[in-house]
Length: 259
Length: 172
Image: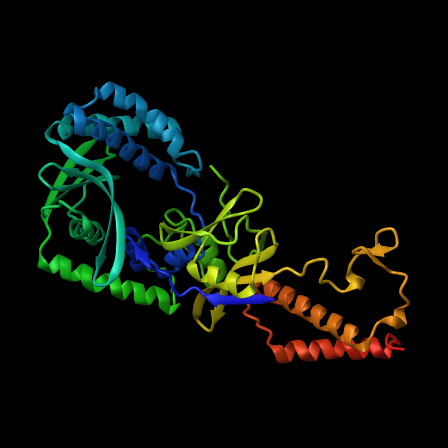
C-alpha cells in the first residue's frame, strides 16, 4: 500500500539567506533547500564560521563581565574553532589551512583592536523569529548591543563599496523581528587583505526597507512553491568555484557551469 | 545524540517506528514531526507524512518505506513524500516465502497445489502487481520520471498474471 503527497510547505519558514539564495539562483535554492543536498563548506566559509564563533565567545561572556577576553587567548582559540568548522570542508586548491588560520587570527586581532572595546552586548547569536507580511521568518542575530543596535559580523576578500541589497535585506529582517531592536544597524566587515582592515557601515531601517522586505518574502515564498527553478548561469556567483552544486546543475539542466 | 536519518532525494529508506506517534517540533525550515525509530535513530519529516502514516495504519515496529521523491511535471519540480507499507511475511503469497523445513510461515506446505482456490491465486496476482508497481514507481523516481499506477493498472496487471498462471495449468 502506498500513500504519497506533494510537499506544499516549501518555504514555510524563511530566512534572509534562504531568500537571498533563491533570488541569486532558484536552482541552487532547489538543490539546497528542497532536495536537501549538502554543499560542503569551503575553507573560506570555515574561516568565516570560526571568526563568528570566536567573536561570539568573547561577547557572550562580556554580557556579564563587561570585559573583553585577552586578544591573545582569542587568537589561539581561533585555531580550534577553525578545525571544528573545517571538519567537513572541501578545501579548494588555493586554500591552505595554515594560511587560513593565520588570516583568521589577523582578523580577530583587528576586530578586537578596533571595535570590541566600544561594544557592550545585551545578546549574542540571538535566535529570532517573527512574521513579515504573513510569512514566518527566522534568523540568528550576531549581536544586539545594549542600545538596541543590531551588529552583524562579516569577513570579505576586499573592502566593500557599500551595503549590498542582500545584507540590507538581512539587516532589515532582523530589525523587524528582533525584540528590543531600536532601528539602527551596523555591518562590521573585516577584510582579508594583506593588512586586515575593519569597515563599519551604519544604516537605519526605514519604511522603504521594510516595504521591500514585506514585498519580497511572500513573493519569494510563492515562487518557491511554484516549482520552477531556473539556473542563473549569468550570475557572477555562478561558477564551479563558488557553487557546490555545479555538477547537479549541469546534470539537471545541461549546458556548462564556468570555472 | 541519536543518529538522524538524512533523506536523500529519490532514495527509499525502510524504517519502523518505536512509538505510534511522533513529536511536533520546529525545524530549520518549518514545523516537522520527529519520530523515534525502533533502531534508536530519529527521523524528521513534514507534517503531511504523519497524515500518510495514519492513513496507512502504520503501527509501532511495523516496517515501512519512506521516500523523499523528486517529481517533475514539465518544467515544474515538486517534492513528494511517498510512504509504502511493506508487505509482511504473513501477508506475502506463499510462493514468495522461502520454505523452512518443509514449512512456510509455520503452515504445513504439504497441501496439494490444486488445493488453492482461484480466489487465492487472484489475491496473489493482485499482491504481486502492487509490489511490482511500487518497485517500478520507485525505480522511475530514481531516474527522474514520475510514474503512478492506479487501481485500473493494478487490475490489468493482476489479471494478466492470473490468466498466465491459468494457462500454465495453475488452476487445474
